[in-house]
Image (tube, rainbow, N blue to C red):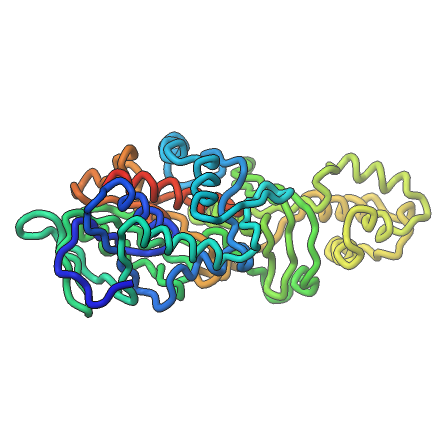
Length: 412
């Protein structure tokens, strides 16, 4: 951490989040003797790292493929991920003193269960690589220098830089510093931003009167699907959590970006929840027909929390205490549909304030993937969430930060 700032550096990295720190480490390790400076506008460094994974920091996942990402083409994302993969990530963190453990979900966390362990180790690694960090220094302008390189400025003054890495993040969790300011910097140097930039990995809000909002704290393992007409756009398996505002949990967060994206094309896009994913309509119908005098609620409670089972009965207009063999054909059909293919009306989402990542950004087609250097502004490199790449929950977005940060750091 330095003050005052130097007047000139060889490499200036805008943003000291996960991707920026990684870029700084590898720029320092591979560019011996280069003057490397990271600038960040936040008053607290690494805020996203500190809150990730409930404060434990889900560093990565043990199985990371391009299929876990959206935005840029899978092939382009795959090229970057291969440059610094999961085994290399695990080895890197072990080398800087952060041992990782694998949980049953495949997520990798520090054995300390503390995100502070991860952040402190990264900051030490930046220092050991010979790079310096200045904060809070918000970068507000980025222009080509008269004699080459770039002029980087803000309310604090100006620094001349031979090369620049943009690692400003997107727009998610704006209190952490990623408030979209990086997009203006990229545009000023000729880059475009995808037409759509919207919250991803974000909880979904249901209408105020929706019965599921009365089940706060109830969770179930489900399949959530997005349908546009007769076409299924996406399907996610995982835990769905009912909350006082709507739906959260891994399944809701993962499906949110696909639902939002599809709905922008077609407002009639539907969100379908399959509460008992191992049972289709015919199987549940057969189970109800065989249940005899057992109550409908009891039949559903074999696979669902009791309160949720009762709510699904209410949504179908069925008394949960009714004997299964007393159901009319119409009532049974309505109940089966509510359980195996419930269409859930979504009022919106909780926005960037609660989103874990941003969908959209600088298209990968404008970046040379072997170095993450801009195709339109030579000497500028980009990495992390500012790129049009967003992954599923579970450490995938951190892995993109490590991989793209590594490529940018070495490339610069």
